[in-house]
Each structure stands twice: as C-alpha cells, then as structure tokens.
Image (tube, rainbow, N blue to C red; front, side):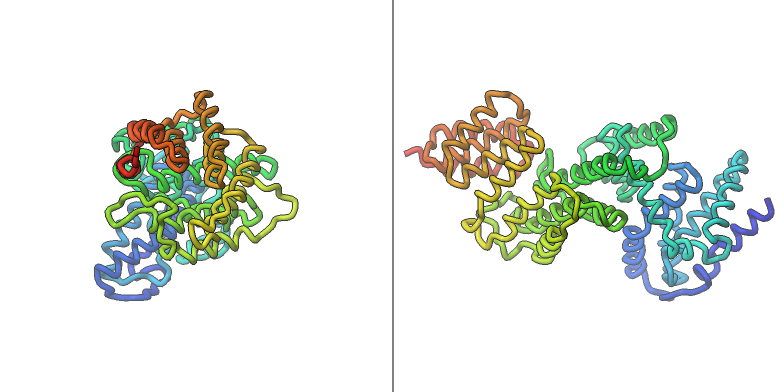
Length: 447
C-alpha cells in the first residue's frame, strides 16, 4: 500500500497547485467565484466521466468531483487560481476518491486497477491529469457518459434527469424545479437510474459502430427534450427556461465535437441555435408571450442564426435528410424572413410534408395545417384540424384549440373563434400562454 500512498501524496496539489504553478495569486473572492463557475461548466463532465471510468462508482465520482470544486472555492482565494484549473481539480477529485476507496478497505483490487489504468495512460507524475487532458481519452470518457445516461434501458424521464445531473452538472434541486417535482422525488429518480445502470450491467462505453446510429438517435432525443422544456415550459408561470435551452445547446455542441461526422447531431445543433436565437423577442419585459408576427426581429440573435445557417450548409455525402435537418430547415425559413410578412409559408408547408412522409404524428399534422393556413389556404387548414380533432389522436387540447381559434379569427368567424379560444385558455399549461389567449379573445370583435 505504500506505493499507493506515495502516488497520492505526490500528486496532491496542496502546496501550490498542479506542478507548483499559479496563474493568478490573491485574485479576490469575486474573481475566484467567476473562475470556479467557468471551470465547473468546462470541466465537470470530464472529471466525473474519468472518475466513473476509473472507479465504476457513479456516486463516488460525483461526490469526489463536488468536493474538489468546494476545495477550489476556498483554496484559490488564498493560493490563487492555478495555471491549469482542470488539472488541479482532477487531481484533487482523484485523490479524494482514492481516500474513500482506501477507507472502505475492500477496494484494493480497484485501486490496483486504477493504478494500472494510470500507467497505461501515462500517469504517475504530478501533472498526469494535464497529460491525460491533452492526450485525448477524455473525449471517449465523455462520450461514454452521454451514451450511458441516455441508454434505452432507462425510462425516458430518467435519461433526461441523469443527463442533466451527470453530464450537465445541474444540481438535483435545479432539475427538480425544471420538471416541477419535489426535490426528494427527483433525487429518488436519479438514485433509481444509477441503480439500474449498476444492477442491469449497462456498459459504460460508446456503442459499437453498428449500434451507434440507433443509440445516437436516443441521445439526440434526450437533448431535444431538454431543449423543448426550456423553449416552451410544460407548466408554471414562465414561458421560457433559458438555462435549459443553453444547457441543451452546450451538450449538443459536445456531441458534435465528439462525433463530427454525425449529420443529424449537426442538424440538431442548427435547430436549437435557430430556435434559441429568437428567445429575447419571444417575451416582453413582463415575461408575456409575444407572437412570432409581432416579435421585434432586431432582437433576434444574429450570431446564433449565422451559426445555425452555416451548419445547414454542410452537406454530408451519403447521409439522408433526417427529421432534425427538416425541422432546422423550417426554422431557417423563419430566420431568413426579414419581416413576418416575408415568411415563405409555402416552403414551410413543403418541409412539413417531408416530415409527414418520414413519419406521421399528430403534432406534425397540427403544425403542417397551421403553416398551410398561414400560407393562405385557411379553409383547407381548418378542415385538416377538424379531422385531427375528430381522430382524438392529439392529446394536447390547448394547442389544437388555439390553432383553430387563430385560423377562425383570420377568416372572420369570430363567434367560433371565441369558442375555441375559451377551450384553449381552459387547457393552456402556463400563465403566459393563458394570458396571451385571453388577450386574443378580448380583441375579437363579434360585430
């Protein structure tokens, strides 16, 4: 055991940061807080992923990583922010995990395994985490983590929660607030997900090349769900959750960076960027919903639009146009329109036809009918919505009623429009949506 102790002591950055180098001594509390926050976003996933790979213990990995960040917050105020904060944190977290494993007294084999792994990856020096960071295997670690969290053996809600916690680094109370469940409920959901991974023997690995296309789809679906909850909250008194949107974009960027040949991953990133670009204009100063036609387009984020459109210009030979690509193309039509009146609703209808050909869902049918109506075929659109209503396949009554009310209003059938607005208001899930529909109803002129 002495060799193990020596290694841990040698690697500990307790004296002056990793390698004894300090970038910024005595920086002050505010500066340190900013540094810790920045490094948390940049390094959390990598540190947790590497610890899970080494220990196979998800809880220990998270606890050790959290302990390292807590220590950084206090130590860096005194010692300064180290030259390589990620390496400093990795070393502290690894030593913390080693201490816990050693105290358990039954993990000698795991410690030996860990050291063997270190030797294989060039570890053994005080700077080994930095060497590890530069050598590339951490990319594999993060991929392993993303694919494990989004494993299809887990319930979908658990996949989303576990991805936000372990990959995104969100705290359990934050995730609970996002999904409007008690903190204890979300904590149990996370515990069950980790237990399922352990007991079911879900492998901590990137799927094989033959499995990758199928499994990547599940990962992208989880990221899309995270973004959707941020783009249009499912309940509550806020229309948007920008933090969830931004987290989904960050994680999708990570997937794109890790698998640059994945065309649908790039398309999803384009889609999320083009939607997020309109966020500032989608609500007014009071948080009330602003419809697309009345948005101040000067408030749209042009940098995100440019990035999203540039992603769509990349064509991947041999790749079919997937659903994220089509949805991104629809958002691109909106992004290119200088005014609401310039919107090419015919082009949008055509893109929805492509989506319907790939797979008919009631939501796509609803959106296609709205696009058709806004392209000028109001009666045909209302007939499609009527058939959708009669089928009973769309569970969300408020979206269907709101779409019917809007088209009826545009066609001058205000009595019928008022009736549908009242239904939409009754079932609208968020305060901003209810108040928007109430304003629409109040503005109708039955005369």
